[in-house]
Amino acid sequence: MKLSTLVMRSLVLFVIIGPTWGQATKEPERYLFRREHDRDGIGKFYMGREIAQVMGHLGAGWLERPERERQEQPTRLMKALDLKPGAVVADIGAGSGYFTFRLAQVVGPQGKVYAVDIQKEMLDLIRQRMKASKVENVVPVLGAESDPKLPANAIDLMLLVDVYHEFSFPYEMTQAMVQALKPGGRLVLVEYRMEDPTVPIKLVHKMTEKQVLREMGVFPLKHVKTVDTLPRQHIIIFEKKREEKKGK
Ligand SMILES: C[S@@+](CC[C@H](N)C(=O)[O-])C[C@H]1O[C@@H](n2cnc3c(N)ncnc32)[C@H](O)[C@@H]1O
Image: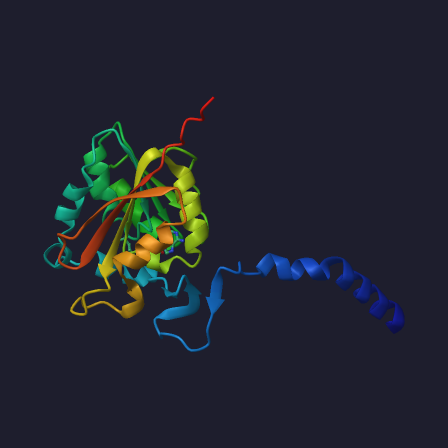
């Protein structure tokens, strides 16, 4: 083929598919990018907050550390959820399943726990433990960065422990999570308290209650309460608003 024909064909191809290249990878305008940023963040900002780097699967041992009970009181957190047998729950950003199996025990055989994570290695750990301890009411789900891949209007309670601040697409994830909640279903965010400088956690992995309320405020969610009885974390509870009945 002559060089001039090749150049011409490449040009035509660029005109046809060129404009769609950019669209496929374009970030929504709600996100800002800064060169100068926290070393533990990804340089991407949402509503004035820098998004944290995702904790890799090699950190699973830290999630399962025995001293976690003393440091964070997860048993107290479980009680605060006031969960009933038979409930359908989603553990979003389940990691190694530290909360997944506690939730599975409470909801019992009539209930179900979707364990959602974007790292296959974390889900493999959950599958191994399901097999070893013969747990049948857990459903591992490989989510995407902007989609938890859950059925619509199906979940009674979604638990996010130490996860939301890592979402690289917090708006899209929350939109999809709200869709997956039943009307009246609860969304529970557990985040290290940014207001407390003595909480020994990296800055971008902490959140203020105010910031969480700001970010959830753009969705059809009602802030039910914030429970501050844990040593290091806020428990911030929202409820999906029920659709108002239309008048005549
Ligand atoms: C710090 S770990 C917390 C794990 C667990 N919730 C716990 O408290 O033991 C955060 C987890 O969130 C996951 N994650 C990050 N972004 C996610 C997303 N968009 N959807 C689902 N999981 C996500 C990470 O892969 C990681 O396993």
